[in-house]
Length: 274
Length: 300
Image (cartoon, rainbow over all chains, first blue to last red; front, side, top):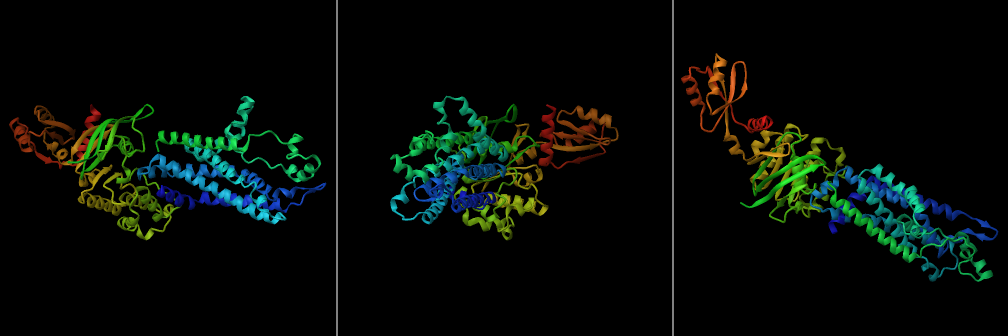
C-alpha cells in the first residue's frame, strides 16, 4: 500500500496536467470568492453579504466549490487516460502491480484531491468568515462545518465517475465528452422520462444535491422574518425552497454510488487487456 | 531441472483472428530461450499473455511452479515491444517507479543506468531521449532489482551497432550468471549467439522447438556444380537422402539427411556418371534453418 501511494504521488505531482488544472481550480475558486466578498449588495435593508458570515459561509463556499467539480472530473479523466496513452498501466502490470493496485492508486489520488478541495474551502471559509462576521462565537463557527465532508464526498463522487469513463473509453477526448454529456443532457433526459419518485435517486442528481444552493434571500431576511413570523425557515414557508432529500440520506446514497463506480471500474479493469 | 515457466495449450484470439493457437513449451532454470518467428507470428502476444497483460482465450501458463495463470512479475524483468515511461519524469524518477512496483531495486538505479550507459542522463526528462536511449532505459528497467528471469522482446530495436553489441554483452553476462532469459528477436544471428534453446512460431503455431545445437545439426546443405544440370537434377532426384532446395543455372543446392555426408553424395554422383565439377558446403546457421522451416511450413 505504501509503495502504491508513493508511485501515485510521484507520477501525479509531477504531471503537467495535474499542476495546470489544480492551479486553475484554485485560481478560479479564489477569484469567485474574492469577487463575492467584495460585493456590497443591500436591497431594501437585505444584506446579501450575510451568506459569507459564520455559519452560512460553509454552505456558500461549498456550493461555489461544487461549480468546479466538473474541472476535477476532467482532471481525473486525464490522469487515467494518460496512463493508457503512455501505456504506463501496461508497464506497471509488467513490473508487478496488480490491476486492483492500479485502481487503488487512482482512488487514493482522487481522495487526496477531494481532501485538497475540502481544505481549500476550509481555509477560505475561515478567513472569509472571520473577516465578515462580527462577534465571533464557537457555536456559529462549528455550525455548518458538516458541509466540508459533504463537499469531499461530492468531489470524490465526480472524480470516481470520471475515472469510470476513463477506464471505459481509454481515450481522453471521448471520455471527457461522454462525462460532460452524461451530466447534460443524458441524465436530465432520463430524469424526465422516469417516474418522479426515482428522479432524486439518479447518481448525478444525488451527487449534485449534496451541496445545495444557499438560501440567499432567506439567510439575509431570516432574522427579520423570524421576528415577524416566528418561522425557522421562512422561505420554505413561502414555497421558495424545493423539497430535497435529507443530507444524511443523500450522503449515504452518494457513498453507495462511489462504491458502485469503483466496483464497475474494477470489473472493467479486470477484463481489459492493457 | 527446475521449471521456471510452463505454457500449456495457450491460445489467444482477437475477435475472429487467432494470434496464437494451442502453444505449449517449457523453460527450465538457467536456459536462454529465443522466441523466433516472422512478423505477426505471435511472439509479442505470447510474451504479453504470459506476463498477464492479456488474458489467454484458452490454455494456461505457470511461473515458478505457482498456480496456473498467476503472474509473478515482481520476480521478472521485462521489456515488451517499445519502452513505456512517463515523458515528464526524469530517468531516475521513472526507474524509481519501477523499483517501487517491483518492491526492490531502489538502490540499483545508478548501477543499472551505468550498465546501459545512461548515468550521465539520469536527470534528463524521458521525452528528451532518442529512440535508442529509450530502449536502453527499458533494458535498465528490466535489469533493476536483479530479477530471476528476463523477458526481452526485440531488445535491440532502435539501437545503433554499439548499442546492439552492448545488449548482446549484457544478455551474455546475465546468462553466465545463471539467469533465465526469454528473448524474442528478429535478429537470428543474435539469437544463435546467446540462446541455448529456441521456440519457432509461424502464424501463431509452434513449428519447431528444442536446443539450438540440435537444430543446427539437424540438416546440412551443400551446393553442387556440374556441366550438365539436367543430368545432375535427374541423378539427385534418384538419391533419397537428399532434397533439392534451390536451383541456379550453374548449381543445385540440396539439403542432406542425417544419414549421408557430402563425400558420399559425391561418390554416388560419380558412380552414376555425373561427376560434380565442385561441391560447396554451407555453414548451417540458425538463419538457414529458420528460413528452411518457414519455407517448408509455407509449402505444406
